[in-house]
Structure formats: C-alpha cells, structure tokens
Image 1 (cartoon, rainbow, N blue to C red):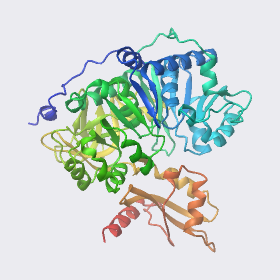
Image 2 (cartoon, helix red, strand yellow; image 1 turned 120 degrees about the vertical axis):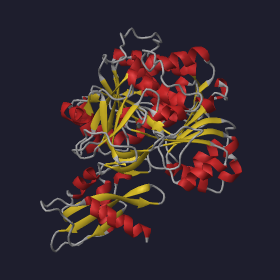
Image 3 (cartoon, rainbow, N blue to C red; image 1 turned 45 degrees about the vertical axis):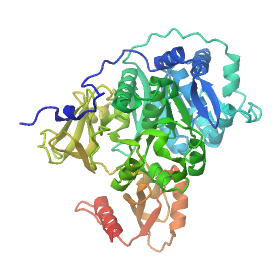
Image 4 (cartoon, helix red, strand yellow; image 1 turned 90 degrees about the vertical axis):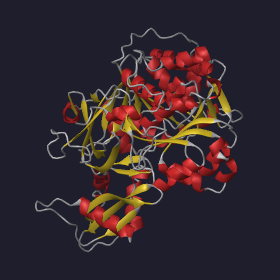
Length: 554
C-alpha cells in the first residue's frame, strides 16, 4: 500500500515536514526587516534606492494618511500599479491601515476593471499617470471616494517630480507624494488584527467567464511566503542576508509576484530589483550591474528570451544568480538543461491565486523533468476521479487535483455559490488534471477548464468569446489556446461570419484590442464556414484546439 505522503522523503535537507507559522499580519515582516537591516536597500529602481527603514516610514505615513481620508478596517483599496516603490509602500500601507488590498492589473480595459472594482466594493484607488485615461472614467462611473495618483518616475533620482498640477489631477484627487509629505505621522496604527482577517482580494477567472475575487487572509499570505522561502533555504542559506536580493519583474498585482518577490523580499530582508515591465535590453542592462542575485522568479517565456539573447553569454549569469524558479506554464526540457548547464539551481512549481501561488514545487536537488514536483510542507494533495470528484485514483492514473493546506483561500468575495463549488471541507478543487508517480511527484496532464496560459498569464477563452460575439459581422466564434514557441500558448479565434459579410484578421484583432487587455487579444484568426458542434449545439472547442495542435506538429 502506498504511504500517505511518499514525497516527504524526497524533500531537500533544509525543508521540514511541517512549519510553525506565526500568527501575525503580513506587514509585520516590514518591521522585522527594518529593525534588523535598517540601512540596507529594500528597493532598487533604475538605480534609485530606498532602505528598509525608509520603506517602513513611508508605509506608516501612507497608512495614517489613508485613515485620515476615512479608510477603515475591512475597506477595499484597489492598487493598479506596475512594479515600483510606490506599489510596495501602498501595499503595506493599506494593510497597516487594516484595509484590504484589491490587486488590479492596470492593463485591463474599462469594462474589466469596472466589474472587479464594483464587485469588491472599492471606494479608494491608488494608481499611476500611465493609466489616467481609463481611471478617470472609472472614478466617475463608480463614484470613488478617494483617488491617489503617482507618476512612476517620481521615485527615480534625477527625474523631475510630478505634481497634482503637472498631472492635471481632478481637484478632489490626491497626488501620491504630496499626500505622504503632508502626513508626518509615522506611528503604527492601533488596529486589532487577527490572522483570519482578509488581507488581499486576488481576482481570477471563473467557470462562468466572470472573474472571481479570491479572499486571502493574513495567515494565508504568511503561510505561502514561509513555505516558499523555506523551500529554497538549501540555496539561500549560503547567501549572507546583507547581500540577498530578488529580481522583481513578475507583476506584483499577480499572486506569483506578490508572494515570491514582494513578500519573499521582506521575509528574507532582500533588495527588490524592481522592473515595471519586461523589456529585454533594459532588463539585461540592469542585471549586468549586480554581481550577486539570490533569487529570480520567472516564467518560461522570460527565461527563453534571456537565454536566447547574445548579450547573455557576456553576463555569466551562472556566477550571478543563485536560484531560478519557474511557474505559470510548463518549462521545456531543453530550457531546464540550459539553466542547469549554466550552474544555476532551478525549481519548477504549480500554484493558483486561490493558493497564494504556492502548492506543489520540485525539490531543488531532486528535480524530475516533466514534473511540477511534490506538495510543500503542510500541504495535502489528492487526485480524484474526473467524472464524480469523489473517488481517489491510483498512482499513475489521471485525476483532478484537490489541495488542502494553510495557504488555501477563505473563499470568493461576494460569491458563495462559487465558493461552495470550489471549496469542500477545506479541499480546493483546482480544475487541473494530474498524475502522481510512486514517489509522490506530480505531473500536469491537462486542464479540466479550458484556460489558456500565454506567457505566464491566465486567459479564459469564454471571456474572449464574449468579446468576439460583440463584433457586428460575427455569427459564431470560439477561442482556444494553441501551441506557441515563445509564449507557450497563444490565443486563436475560430470565426464564422454572418451571411454576406467579409472581414480581415486585422479588423477582428483591432476590435478585440479595444475590449481586452493586450495579452488576451487573439493573435491568430481562422475564418470557417461552420464550427464543429455537439448534438445539443454546443461548439466543440476541444476539437478545434486538437486540430490546431496536430497542425503545429507537422
């Protein structure tokens, strides 16, 4: 009989079977880092640095400024910012005020943002000048009480400082830097925190096609960052704390970046090398200035682009980067081997917004090619019959992945029906189909849902379909993920036009650009006279996807 947790014996030497998780709010990590290494750089942003002590001070100013604006415990505050010092300060400032962070992708369109912010009951928004166009409309439509605007360059030394006037802000809005300057209160707000308090609402796609807000408590965030940090201790333990750093190019509004870069950096008192976007030339130029980088959380498309660039050979990344982790999509075998050949340790993992990005990861010293690894400490994983979801399958047989552990969400915000569907007795139904071998290593086989993962971003086809159907010339449409050498998958739309209509690929793509975030827009269009359907008239997405996969192999 297979033992209950066969994977425990394959953990790296530094990883315990169970962890003691402190019952503290996540922002407490900032106070610890500021007390132990006050003068070390917490953020490095285009060469400009803020120490842990400075981050703590500005975090507390932000918290007290928000309280003066009327923000109370449990209020939802949306952050629509790229990776920058302002995000770090606002994130921990909102939490210090007792409020809940609602992570927002600033690339989203008005309709996408309106739904999420309305659903979460957002009344305060912190965003930046690059998103002012859509944010002005949102502020009016949602009647937001507080809008705080920054210019990303305000925290870069030598760049001109923006003002409320230069950004032409509405009279009722607040300029980020001016708000902090006007609030000199750096005392810790007297908020009664419980570990079970919701800290973050992280929106993710749903089976209905509408995003769902995963409610993540302070204890969920603490558990996830402890699990992730301890998983890599066998490597990071050799790096003096005073020299630890993390490459922060994964967006902080994404659960992966939030856990593995932002909170990881505070737990490890590591310098965050911040990138508001992934521009390859800019990225390589910045990395060349750092001799030692402890940790680089990435997705396969980033790693592919970096290792394919001619400048990379000159950087000797093997002598620079200690550990790379990859998530968001499967890592090609050839890419894993390239990383290993450079002498860089590597870990691959699987997680969801609902698990605060943690869940299953490959042991660093005993990685199996093709496997996502083993469950982390204190996590339980089952594979159940795909049809009934009730019976556990045998090792080697495919089944839906169910996971239970300390980082599992509290439920979906304002959505008890979906919460009941996905969470049963603490077990989260993931919708992913996997297999487990005799040693307890897991492998992703397929997706129960039709989610597309392109460049590490989750794309839900139904959302794309709904936009396609808004086009006046389209009679029928369906989208699917098809293989792409660079992004892993890309979005392809299969379209039947209305009788007598004609359209071009560009026309359809341009229409979608006005309705969807850039990474969701179909890159490929195929016009057909008809689409395959089931006996009841349902368009068979899987057949079209399988056809595209077959064509790509020829």
